[in-house]
Image (tube, rainbow over all chains, first blue to last red; front, side, top):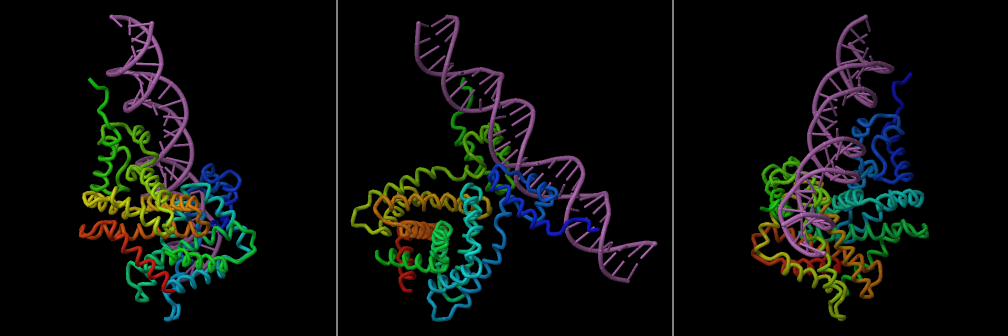
Length: 190
Length: 190
DNA sequence: TAGCTGATGACACCCGCTGACATCGCGGTG
DNA sequence: CACCGCGATGTCAGCGGGTGTCATCAGCTA
């Protein structure tokens, strides 16, 4: 006789995405999420710092993954190729074809609420900061490190938007590569 | 005998920045701001959509200014130079030397609170969206338009940070120019 | 058997924010 | 001059997000 069902956090996440899809993010209260998960509101806030965070799992994992790949890039890699390599590796590891439909749903929910967009932008900014730190570790000086880091995140944002919009005709890594080439073309043509 | 002192909005803004500087953003309640401004809490929310917005005045003006300058750039301008021209014009119009100390204070407060950073990122993202729209109007196709727009905002962010950090030895427009050159160098060297 | 631990519940509370309605100087209009 | 409508503000009640604090109690360990 267990006292509580296991994996309260997972139940909360499932309940949240279901309710967000049914009624929208803003119309859903934390009390509703907690009730559907079979716990109290207080328990929700023990697992998630705030209501938005339930939609942003594993952000720290991805950040360390990216920073680690930049740090591990061969010495011959330029700053931009180091970033690009990390992004493509992350695409292969975290954003496979089977995740695409889930990513699209999540992207839709986030697009529907300025609150969630703010949070997403903050996460992306933390990726950029991690990139910049990893590049400085490689000897890249400011402001170049920050500029490449932000450009890399811009490439990721743009490529990701195309990936979730298109119907999985192409992997995210390939789209990232194309987008990066486009960035170089349009910046260096000036 | 006037019924109310004039310029409640201005008094609220002044009270807010003073209290944020004294006690920090998170420790300051809207009730305190309203009390110091001599109005009620309800009036605060009539002028500002939320507590953070009191620190982000004229954002819409700047956005239309930037988009207008991109639209008015000469046909010979490349996308990136059109963006750069708009940024430098904005630097001259909105961020003169006499605004620098105020900008620094504001930047410090924003840096102290994740909530405020989120809001700032959202504003910058809206600038990027306006840039991208103006570029598409000029015939630049996606994803190039969005990429240049985001790169331009990255240049502005980086240059602005350097401007408020340094002791006004240089105007913002000049720093933007230098930062843009650095971006080109580090992106095109790949 | 006793005690400790860790996840959860229960409760009170603060603050950001909103809707609805009341107030009343001022400026115009007959 | 009397009236009236406008618009900025006040008042009040209430919701939802978020937190501090203590109680509960199955299961493990001694």
